[in-house]
Structures are given as C-alpha cells and as structure tokens.
Length: 238
Image: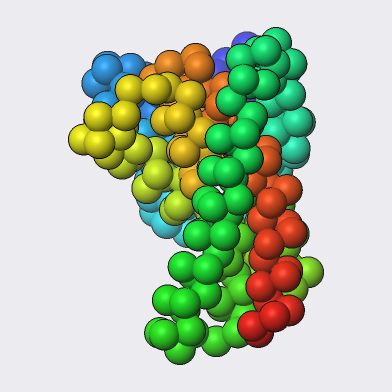
C-alpha cells in the first residue's frame, strides 16, 4: 500500500478493524499500567474495557459487529488456559509440597463462592435463571459460560459477572493481602486465582512469579471444582 489511507479503507470494511483496535487498546492500557508502576487501579483489563466500550458507544457500533473481529482473540482463551500446565510442570516439586493446603483451600473457596451467592441471591429474591448465572462467576470465562448455559442461566450475563469479578479481585488483592500481612506469595497467588480466575492470575504474575504460578493452578482447579459444585447445588436447592 502506497498511502496509509489505503490501509484505513481496507480495515474499515473488515472485521480486522476491531481486532486491530482491541490490540491497540490493550497496548495503550499496558503502557499506562507500566507508567504507574503497575498500580492496582491501573489494571490493563479495566482500562481496555473502558476504552473499547467508549469507542463502540461513540460510533454506535453493535457488539455483534465488534465481536466479528474480536473473536480471533476470544479463540485464544482456551489455549491460554491450557498453557497454564507449562509452569505447573516446571515447578511441580514446589507445588507438590503445598498440595494438601491447596486442596483444602480449593474445597473451602469453591463452596464459599457458590453458597454465598446462593444465600444472598435467595435473600434478594433473584429469579432462578439470574441466580444460576451468578453461581459460576469465580470460574474462568469459558467454563463459567458453559455451566450457566447447561443449567438454564444466561451465558452473556455470566460473562459480564466473570469479568467484573476478575477486575474487582485484581484491584483489591494486593492492598488486602498487604493489610492482612500475608507475605507468602504462594498463598497470595492461590487465593487470587481461586476467586478472580484469569484477570487475577495476570495481576499475580505482575506482582511475583511464584504468585502467578499458584494463581494459575488455582484458576485451573477451580474451573473443575466449580463445574462439579454448581450443578450439585442447583439440583439440591433450585
């Protein structure tokens, strides 16, 4: 192409436009986060969502059209989740030493997340489908949406709740752990991965490599635990 305008003409009629804008929004968000020394409030995911949402709203672009390009990134969610097995394999000796407390934390964390939603949702009088959509919010997006869909929930609502849960967890985890004087990065990482899935795991890797490793393990294990716990609770109580 001899002129930059030709590139714009091509992209404006192609789904690649929204893929390109998504990538640039992420690069912009990461640069802001780095400039602010990875401050919890400067979360790249949150900044990217705000930038893209404002862009779509400003130009009146429906989400379906945006997703035509963004689906290429969405496809990578599955491989990225599976890739967590790589650091797990490399650090297996360290993981094996903490296996018992990890299993205990997994059981308590998964049950607490689901039961607390069940109790508060019932108290608030939420409809059955909305309550089911809330239940798997602490699992990674692909698993949570599949659970919600199979049980009669709203996968789109579940996706929003998953993102919000991850962002809130990534924002509060470092100040909260510091306030509680928890210095064990394995424990810190496992806690954030258990409650805030991929977004929290990304934040854990920014803080410490060990924290990121255990956050990834917790995210993977909680996906399995949630897929077992949530259907059981729905069958028993809903």
